[in-house]
Length: 408
Image: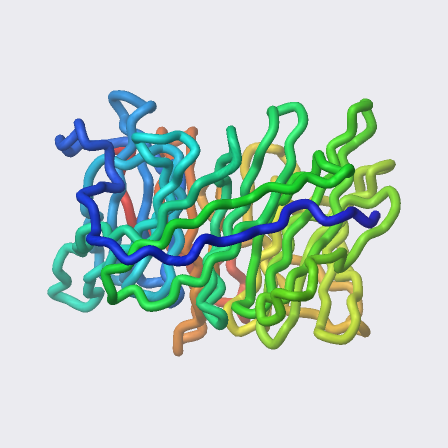
């Protein structure tokens, strides 16, 4: 399926001005709440610090931002930094710096981009993490009723990429906003306006943004006015060559592509779903060709693929056969000629909502950081370390280490 261009972006030159007194957080709220449940989170590149938005226990319409330093062997309590906007979007640009994209309280069509420094230690005796005051980098004027819905940072090109959505819930159009972050040490505020030019084939939604620092891959789904199932294709954008338009990377009639994930060395994994029979297939692109991941004794339908940080293994996030919870299934990365392999379930004592692989220890223990909950034990969404030994039976060699205690 080939779509015409959706969105063209133009930028206003930067304006030199003094930084106004603006805040990322709701100004009328200053109290710190106790307890809540994770709403969204972002992990730094090394995997030893996170920022977490938590819905308050006493009022789920209000949210707080928590700072967390991570050490699997040494518990470091999270710090409640203060109230935050429920629509704010977060991403790390380095281990010690994160950005927040948040709607302005003065104008619903203007969003502000802030940056903050994160100070933390993970070795005993670790101090509670702290964050600097938010520094305003950009004011971004959107089309009428436009909104940002996802952001990601491409490190090799120092570019913040955000998905813009316009239209009604029934009929939406997506676009990409690309903004180099530049020198963040000077007191310069850049005003940018997004000019929307919708083609005749509007009604396309972007999802599942992933980047390896130089390229952006995402899914693009065309909304249909009839009752036919939604079909999404895999799109790609070269961030080093902005003159080249984004285009279709993979597509197939009657097949929906979803959940792309970058590995190392230009590798890419994704899932396809046959719209007729519902069969889900995992695929790998090795930089030259793509091939199906052949599985055996595995009748489940993966929902997401997670690469090991070194690229040597894959994890399939999948709803278990009894439908009671979601689990991670491990397999070593196959080649195109590998025989079928049986994925091994990693015990998790609960259902996993999301996870990121952060590495393998010298003692051969793979660590993932993820959000896990267990309603049967009365545990809400918390951040955990999910640890196992890839070369041994995980049934007897795994550990779940709780990092947060919001729902206690």
